[in-house]
Length: 203
Image (cartoon, one colour):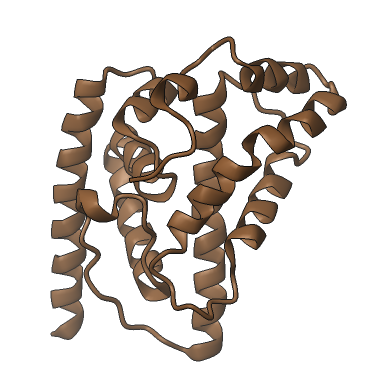
């Protein structure tokens, strides 16, 4: 799994990204502009990971996904940034929503309703599924989040955002051991929920 930033830098509370985030939070728009070149490549790597399993001619490309995510990040809503890891955690949520919106739009056009199982294993932990799978996973993840909000957050950050267990721990203020345990439990629940839902749909 390739990453453009080490786990240490992702959890750094005094680095340049964190300083700029806090200045931006105070209303410093120049800090926001200075932030862009520092996070752009990492965001693009994560966007590429999200789109890795899509077909080569997919209309949503990594650059477009990054630009849309950043456009939403700099919207009117103020965020109390906790640091670099928190920023990429919020970006993960944005990318998830953009992928879901895109999949829904495509499905409305093509009228496709079939879904297939999404193998939630370590090998594809940073890869988003295809259109139908995105929607199936989103429905299951919404249900999981109602039952266990923390597990829902962990899946979103790991699966859509590509954050490591240590990075997720930093975002959610948890121990790495807790994140690993909850991630394993959540994957098992989602696998069961999605495969059960598929079997019921066939009856």
